[in-house]
Length: 92
Image 1 (cartoon, one colour):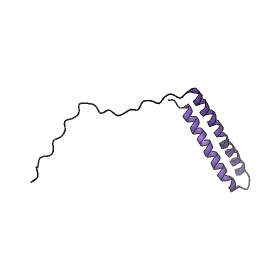
Image 2 (spheres, rainbow, N blue to C red):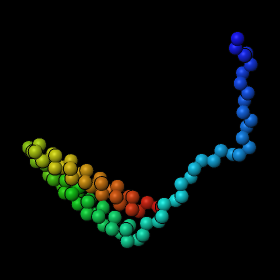
Image 3 (cartoon, rainbow, N blue to C red):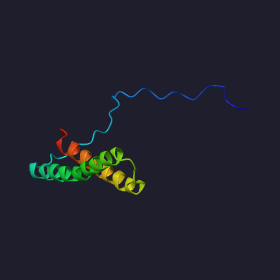
Image 4 (tube, rainbow, N blue to C red):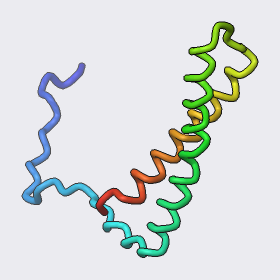
């Protein structure tokens, strides 16, 4: 027959539960930050052009749908530029 008593409970640990905390990343140099910001600003230019062309297309009487993929790509490139600038200027 089976034993009706439950298995014994292990004694509580006397050590507090510590989680592994990775060491902080090395600080980025000023030159790398400047290069990231400059490259991010360069990536903003296609987005600016896309906005200008989109505004011009909306104001005209006929909207050329063949221009739409280029507008979307330009805006996506600008978004990457914004993310790059934000990453470069974020506090570490």
